[in-house]
Length: 459
Image (tube, rainbow, N blue to C red; front, side, top):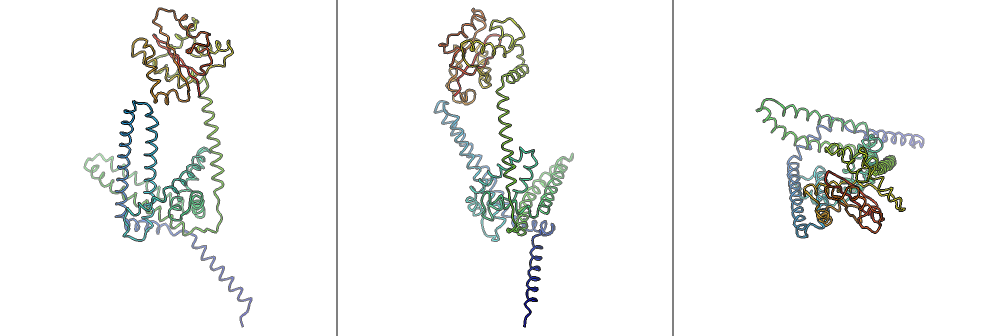
């Protein structure tokens, strides 16, 4: 008759033995097995890898051809339209081309992993490529999530971005071979690496070290002073570089398979810390962006930048010429004084201060160059032509509902002070007057012959 207590002891011993065996399976195989296995996999899949490489070259050339055709189409349609509306057309075609290129790239990435994982040698590379298309959207969405996490981590002193990247480096394999989607793929990738972090990271470092040494050897061969040796080395390096890429692909795939086999799905894993770090990083990025915008809009900073640029362009001293136009004979006044004088006049009639705008400053410089090339005042012909150009609007007048210009010809018979005073009159009904509620931003630039005022009303 069996002893119940002895039976329980035997069952417990068997359970412990099973757990011990299971715990041993959780370790990754020796590095030698990974190195040899990667070589064997590469040699076994070599012909398909070569054909996949040729397919990649074909896809790249095809994408470039499609992009070239898109550019020709956009140029032809813009010419037919007379140049108007060309920018939205280029943007639309660019988005279409970009979307096609991304879809093809992701389908190829999926096809490559499917090819490495396939045990049937008779499957063609085109079949793998066809099978890769269903993974385009999952890979794209997962990529967006990974980008969100990595970029967010970058703004938290960079190091978290590197750590997050390491934990997510197997996510694409999880999407394709495990059928997981975005957050599930990221979570499983992090779990696989976390459970054997030291072993996996050590094997990745070994691969990186191999690539670094290989690149150094390549540079040494190519820089050989002997032209014969250098030329022969170039051919050899090309062949070995391709083989190195194939080996790296096989190595990474096999590392994933070994790590996946050692992965215990029952163990809890979480990516909450990644999400928290990323959110904190994006908040920091938003604050940095807000600070940059506020700084750029600061009129004193704009004046400092303007003076520095003009000094580099050999135009220092132009500000003092403009200051004479507001009736002050001081030679050391700057654009800032003109800006303050205009706002003082606006304050006299209870108008809010006008803003100094960098877009209008850029166009003022462009307009001044037009007048310099023309040699005399062009009755605003250059400005009127630019006002019909959609590219000019999207570049220089973006965000404005209305713009106007005022040009003062300093070579005319009318005195500078009197001429400027008439243009900056207090008559608010004057469509070109800065002392009116029709405009809330401006900029001015001058040379020896002309003063160009640009003013606009923001949307």
